Structure formats: C-alpha cells, structure tokens
Image (cartoon, rainbow, N blue to C red; front, side):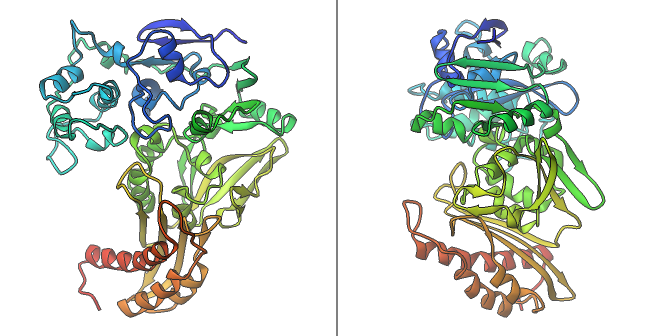
Length: 478
C-alpha cells in the first residue's frame, strides 16, 4: 500500500484501510463518530461531510458529500471537515447554534449530517439576501441544499427556520478564509489491500493505458453508484480506477456549433457552469437525486452504467447528444441514440472511457423534462421523458423525445416523433401524438409502478409539455 493520508478537521491523518473501505467507515474507526450510517446508499444524508473542492476562481468551495459512498482511498491528499470540525459543545458553529436555537434536533441522529449540508450552503460564496420564496430564505439560503438529508423527528420546519436565520460568516471564520486558497490537487494513488486495488492515475494517458492492459478494471468517478454496490451488495471489484480528478475529463466549453461537457465534471459543476444556457438540462438537474449526490455524480458515470432508469439519458437523447469515447488508440464519437445496446450494455469497449458529452447547437425552441417518481426529489424515476421540439409558424418542424424507465434501455420515441413532425402545434396534434407515445417502449410492473401507470404517464407528459409551452408564451389554447 502506498502511504496515503487525509487532512481531517485541520489535522493530517494517515489512512490504514482496505481498498474498498468507505470514508464513513474510516472516520468512525478513528473516533469521529458524528457522521452516521442511515441508508448506506446516499439517500439520507446522515453521513454528510464537507470536502474542499476546487471552485471556478481557483479557490476552494466547501462541498457536502456522502461519506458512505466515497472510498477513503479517493480522499488521499484531500481535505475534509466533519461535524466535529465545525464546532464544539463549548464553541458552537453558527450552523449548530441556529439548529439548537430553533429546536432543529430531537434524537440527534441526523443532525451532524444536516449541519454539514447546511454549512455547505452557509459558505456558498454567492449566497446573498434575496426575495424570499417557497424554497429560498430571505438570507439567500437555498432549501434544496438540504434535499438529500432526511429527518424522522422534527418535521423539518425547525431545520428550515434555522437555515433561514443564518447570517454571513464572521470575518475571523477560518473555514470562510480557507475558500481563498486553492483546493488540494489530486494525488496519484495505488492502494492494494483487502483483496482489491484502488488506483488514481496521474493523467488520462495513464488511465487509458491501464484500461488497455487491465480489461476487467472498473472505472469510478463520484462513486454514487459503485458505493451502493459495495455497501449493499458486497461488490469487491479487483481493480478500481478513479478518474474524477483527471483534468482532461473536466472541461466545459460552449462553441458556435456544440457544447462540450467533460464526463468527470460533477452535476453541480455543470449546473453552475451552464446556468440556464441549456433549458432542458436546467429542468433536469434540480430533479436529479439530491445536492449531496449531484456534488459527486457525473454524466460520464450516469451514462457509463447504461442504466435504463438513469435520469440523464432521456434529456440527453432529446438533445441529440453525442459521446466522445477515448482509448489508447484514439477517440470516436457515438450518438447517444446508438450507444445503448441492451440492459446495462453499450457500445463502449472495455478499453474505452467516456471523455465528454457533446450537445449540438442550436437548441430546440420547446423543451421539457418530466420525471415521475414517488418522491419529488432524491428518488429514482418510474418514468422520465425529455422533449425537444422546434415549431416554425405554428408547425412542428423537428421533434426528439427521449424515454427512460419504459424499456431495457433508454430510447427515442421515434413513432411519436414521426406523428409530430409536419403537424400543427395544437391540442389536436398533441392528443393524437400522446396516444402513440403511450404505446412506446415495453414498460414492466415493479415496486415503483405498474406497466399501465407508466404508459399513462407517457401519454400525459406530452399534454403537460404543451400546456407549459402555452403558459410560457401566454397564448390561449387552440
């Protein structure tokens, strides 16, 4: 094992752990038991900690992540803060103080995780007083920053009150001052123990060379999928290659004809980098799991699993996205519509990784993303639909519809698209096309939804898009 270490609450600590040990397990082993295991799959936030991540200005952003999902080996050379590092019983951190004052803690199990997620938002550099809304406080606090934290006791109102009572960090706040300095750079890592190996290559060339020589290697970025498999299903891959800090995979560019998104950018980084530049993604990303997950998850990872219920695929299919697949032999571009070949299978070879996602420009004029799930946030889709339509002088000139959760793979609704193109953009066309859309795919019944329900939701989605478009254009329905 290489000598690896993590800076925890300002103190550098050596790591002696197996290749598959999570940060949560390791933290508790060294006596920092504030972070708790609730679900072990990134849905409850009881394990949240703060990671010093690079921001857009060369400084540091304190980013809340799920410690239960991150391999501690992935934190080699990195810097984290746990609930114990925020404050102490004798000197509470402002977040902890407000939680106590508002009665935001009862049994206390989830409280350390809430404190870390709240601190992420507390230290957000662009947080400023704003007009209060349903999900934003007068202090600019975005309530969605807590969407990945669950509490069984308080009913959430005291936690919200605590969040909305927070002011700005004090002038002598050390964690606030830390934001002005660069985040730790990625450290080459090679851990071999516990029957597994965890490697962080120094460059994309090295990563591709390993993939060529080790075809059984498993790529990992944010570990929001692999972490679940390790925790709940006992997966122990012999070789894991971490690629989330490779600079070649972390680019974002907007050109004249294409937008290119690096496959290892976190979804939160994509969200900030694009803002509202791609309206369809602007609708998708707030519904993609929770902020805790988006702070680690990537488009490359979501598409790399080839899951039929990944939320990214339907939206990107509607955008006619292409994937750049890289190997030691070079790169090739594949249309996402041709990428999926079967259940969790794709055209990506064992020696390839997804380097980037390309979205052609210009974008369609009418776009929408509809996700049907049991919970509004932090839940897996029963059905997900992405729409991208062009309407010229009242006639639909192009249509792309991406579907998820209704077949063994994400897919394009080609039959529905054919009905729409060339037809007038009115309620009669939409109703006729909705009947076709309702029959697309081969939905099944499972614990999330019945096949009949999924079909009905498909039919309703196009009507919902049409209604939203009318409201946006302030037109009277035809």
